[in-house]
Image (cartoon, rainbow, N blue to C red; front, top):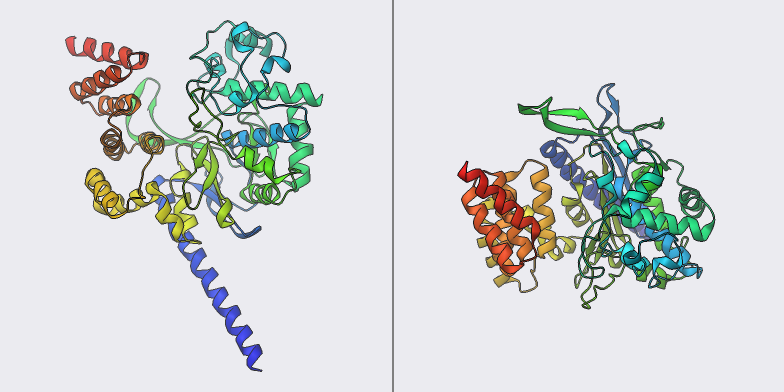
Length: 484
């Protein structure tokens, strides 16, 4: 009888703990949805190889007042790239692709200066290739006046490299367009069929498929966005509008998959349990950075753009369309997936706070989440003082330049100009030898109307990097505006 009572007590304790976790998650989600004005959201949490939480919030379709359900399908945009990364690594396992092989081994009709670019350099965005998006319609993403893939490919090959291969990072859709071509060449099937057979069907992803705004997708959550510029006029207030997007079929290795949070959670479980790879070493290799020519690690792992290679609570993940994101914590047996129907909602900002509901130590390990949580309370104008104080108290507190820069740009996209300004200012303070930090700070100063100080930042950026062509152009533009 005593043993039975002990079991009941243990069960009740675990149940209460789980309820507390989910209640804390609800609090975070409801707060963020309110502040970011997110119409609808889907969440899944994976812990110890199981989906421990799957919830839906708000409206999937505002026009018809349709609520989000667990089966509502969301575009995942650039999260598609992690599926491309898995496909490439599956072929690496099979000996059909070598990461360090030049792409000329797999593709014909390449310009001479492209031929030595490696598969790995495509995966990690250090190829220097020209951007295919520049040849697509900037508003819809469709193929525009060039009409056909053949015409776009012909034009793309005439464009120069943006930088010397292997020396810089530049997020670029051309890289994943070519990876799709390589997958098709070595498998003798379309990349979409490859993904379906080698990933979707193995996992049992019944609500995952390719498509865009042109396709009739059942249970689909259309994407919305706030705008304040219509018909050549700026409005006093933002207005929520439908966001129409086309992903030409030949570019869909970069963006084009639609899914649910539960399907994504199942995929993560399959990925970590050995259902998609034959060897655990393949997963470890995929989740490792490549290297620039100078030996420094790349910002990206192979297909994965959010990389937190810290001492404790390593995390890796991806975001897409500034409206869907996921993070996996391999050492903590934890993963968080959030999909929304609002472009610009940037859920990657609060994923770690949700993870902290399941492991509080994760919050302490992530400088950005720690900063965001505290600056919300004390004010972003105290960012520098608070950071310096925290660094003295905790020598392991070490915000990274790229993370701060990306966070500030996300705030800019979400019309949080004042907050973004303070974080760019913090980045310059922490990284006074970074030309890019000054360039970014100059941009937000210019957006806020402070032309004189923006000029100072661009001048400093050019001084640190005389090859900063963007800085030079912006400086000329500001000087011209001041004279006029």
